[in-house]
Length: 60
Image (tube, rainbow, N blue to C red; front, side, top):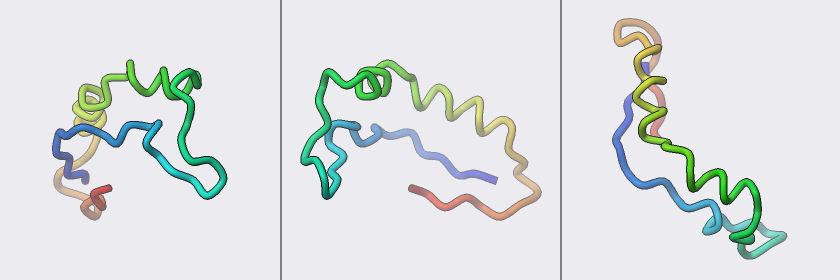
């Protein structure tokens, strides 16, 4: 079971690590993250989840 609320995801270049302050905007994974329709994919993903069985997912 999953609970999802549509909201803007943290931009990947804003993700901080102890090794690098910011990810480059030219990074291929940063570019890919900007074109993937995350909320649209979540709708299809939620259709595969059961609302009757399983523990409720933890919101990120």
